[in-house]
Image (spheres, rainbow, N blue to C red):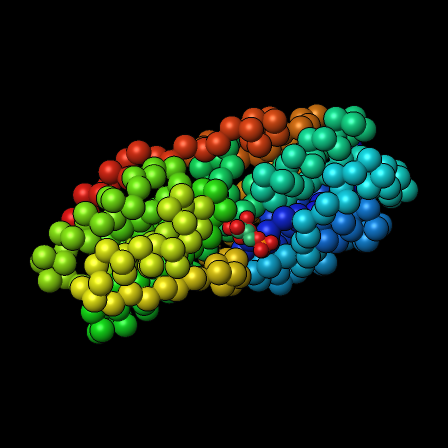
Length: 324
Ligand code: F6P
């Protein structure tokens, strides 16, 4: 392998820069020429490709976002888009790709890799942490810290005013951000799609605390929760409890995607970046590099995209116990 292209695609995640840096530097270390592809698959189609060197990734390990920029590319799903991308890969004489992103990124990689018999290795980077084959994806830890910091602040005002807050967090269809930040932020309730207990359960719990005169409460709601939006929830609670609870809604939104990556994310990204280049040198392809139980793991891209990581029952149990 003489030339490797690297791109970030889908939702950006803090720590992606650290991963790009590690990929580029490992290439240089092993005498491979690294190429940065801008705006994910969009840039590959539009030939937005630039040769990189060890210096091009200096002073980025601590920066959020991605210096290569990111995009979700509908074009890459078309025959023509893929053909154009393949032409550009040949023009730059790339021998392999490292793609950093989530589910959608890996699906695209798999299809492209199979179609053109081209080696691709994936690095999991998404704040949602919804990727099978790794305990943690790059960005998850930082996003959690951002969420918990916000939750702590909301608690201050919630307590001062005896208010009930519904706080919506990201995660798409997964409840990992909600569950971890719920435990870490000491939320009274966590609503996640993986364990839908219905609105009745929330009513029961609010009934109990209302009797205890505990009217300030934080309910963390995963955006993929099955009981409707946070506003729907607020409405239903208002109908059920009237003025026994004063409710407020906060949607944390894209603030969760930004910020300086935590040390945990930087280290994870650096490890996975190096591993991805080494995997390609070893002739591996169509796989994702990950770390599970402190061990390096290679997961077929097919499995990484099709299997869903399970919500740890232990976490749900802990959340239940400590929120009584
Ligand atoms: O996948 C990361 C994520 O932030 C999800 O949590 C969220 O549902 C989605 O991306 C938002 O996407 P966009 O930034 O395109 O609005």
